[in-house]
Length: 235
Image 1 (cartoon, rainbow, N blue to C red):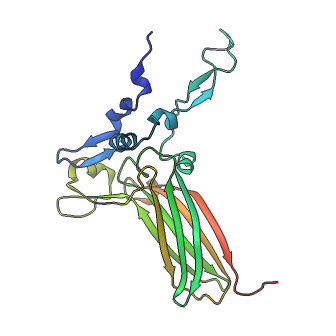
Image 2: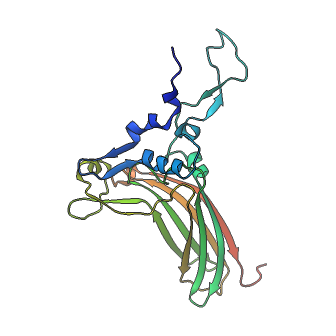
């Protein structure tokens, strides 16, 4: 038995979380995203968030009881874990006001907890910011922003299945993910009657669809905020 400094380092994670295909397209780039985070002054290793220390038995209590001992959590939660998503992003409705054209809304998003882009990992992962207004009469209007990395094949079409990324990817079309410590303000104009009482809801949704089939999707709503806007008194 010997102490291994390597297992405390994020470099341990690079083997599975950094990959370019034969055409030089970055399919997995979580480690290089973390390297950029460190170059900008970030001080966390991957293990701080994905293997946090918890109280546990170091050895079988029948052998020896040790109180107050900490070990690293080996569940290694990642992008599919709601708790990790909640720690990574912050969302606030900054402004919602009525205009002659409809309801103007400003939402602030910040990557406050991840030392890599959100979402990271497979380009099939995306985070959706959904803004919805419901009027007193029941009319609904909804708009979205999607944060993801879009990868193209040799024909210039977006790849929509995990299994094709490693062999067919030729270029990155766009990357709208949130970098570490990045803050973004998104503006929406929802074309809706502003004479009625309104309920405004903003929500963040994590979506992973590796095969472009609903039955294999992972969908998690992990943050939401609601505001009511009144144009008249309601008994």
